[in-house]
Image (tube, rainbow, N blue to C red; front, side, top):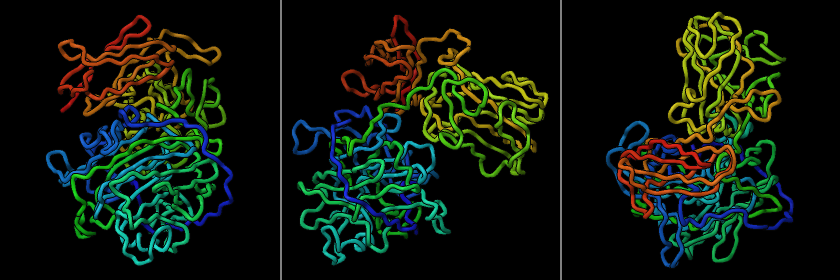
Length: 597
């Protein structure tokens, strides 16, 4: 869910005078292309959580000239009154609206700084819900990952009336959705857990006493069909939200939000999002699946939202922008091991957590295989079990594509189980270790044994090794009752570097893959280089005709370019089979990718 409209504890904050200043520009996107963004398709849990009514389509997102500003381009998102085949909710029910949404996940992440967006939204009337916002890169579920809304509009009348004695409001309860804009920060707080809010969602904008939230109102000049600046001033101690209207900056809260132990989510990196939703819980329109829950949509459609630019500056001496996925790991990467030499490791309770799914296991008493720490469990009569090691931030194990996942296990011979991985996109893949059969080196005699799984088997057709959340999962689906134990879990490259005494084996200079494949709209063409080097990546059609090409200087480790399904002249390529060829360091490698309609 992106929003949770429920009773949560009001968080009152204090602040001191901030002596800080905006520093140098760290990064900007002026939207001459969408190279830093992924288009979102579907309705999914976003519609379910917020009750939104739209289906996100790639066709509703593009780069377009800004009306009245010659030579200036912007991200354009169009919402439409549209239905048809495939425009359905997550249960397959028809939807009547489409819109657009983009994210920088795996392309750009930000930690601290002054973040500024120049945004223009359309006439919202009733039902429009535009937002420019951020989500934490943490692998935890919402709200534990944290959410930051630089701007959002379309709030219901009760919310607008509650705060209209401040910040431009007139206290007459007569504002429209086009005359008010707000911001928000959402996170997990144990103090907010109650029967009506079991997820512990804490929201700055939930302010029933009207003492802290200060949305901005402008009755004379509505906040639509023109550009405004939205800013977040963010450092390790506080967050301040503002809007700049005709050169005047207005704070959106009574004081900066002071970060504390409960809001530690906001001391981690975040990625950017922009979308134009229709209907749902934030608005006075009805919610998905219940036409009686609110008013009909009256927003004039089609409607267009523009984001002219997003910029990140240093703020109070802080600010960091990361382009691309996390830094690639190498050598031997430990997940849960005491004695095996590693290049780097996850630390349980600090950078990773051990999770048992749905209480399917209870603690066992089997001694560890090595060292002082082991994982020992007994099944809990749930008919299945699942557990795994999850890193708190995505882990990039792309360099291990020709390597192995290794671990020790002691489990009865008659238990069939699976080992798998899960990436941050929700893709998961498993390999099976059958009962009473030797596979991946595991002799099924009920004693401690070692399993060695080639990553080529484990990654399946869609796993993004650059963005893993669960680096190890064990799953049993047959309902077998047993006691078992795990230990000494790690990933190992075919070439192990940075680990004393490690064996060295040959390794190919690149691993060429694409994600997604097949694809609609765009795909990432991914490759790894053993050292920095020039590269040329060329896309050919099935007849061998050159379609487009990419050239650059690749870095050691994981690299990626994004193909938007167009030729070098910008024309859309026809659906079909294409080949992409990487040439670097005097060697070449080719793979197939399929473009769908």
